[in-house]
Length: 125
Image (cartoon, rainbow, N blue to C red; front, side, top):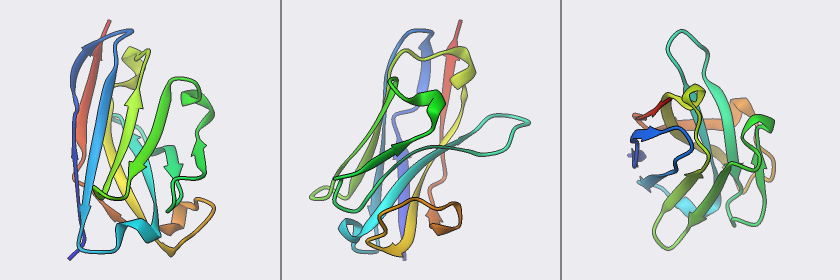
């Protein structure tokens, strides 16, 4: 079955960086877009970034543009989220998600079919 496993979270000081990884299995990773989301305590889950199946197009939420970078390595079935200039308000559980639409070119909230278990990111001030 489809599995998504995130790693790379942890505790970092404000201004620091982290790189999250998400390894996918159980499906043909290279044919599907991937996304990163986060959810802070008491808040709704929010979209951060997405990357299409080929890696040739990326999308970002406005509040992470210039700080976060999504990338993928289809040979390793892995999607990454490089996070720089982290702020205390970035503290949340971060999730990767797999789009269920074959070679979709645009992200859609209803398109994400599979989710990882999440990894905690805590940014101290």
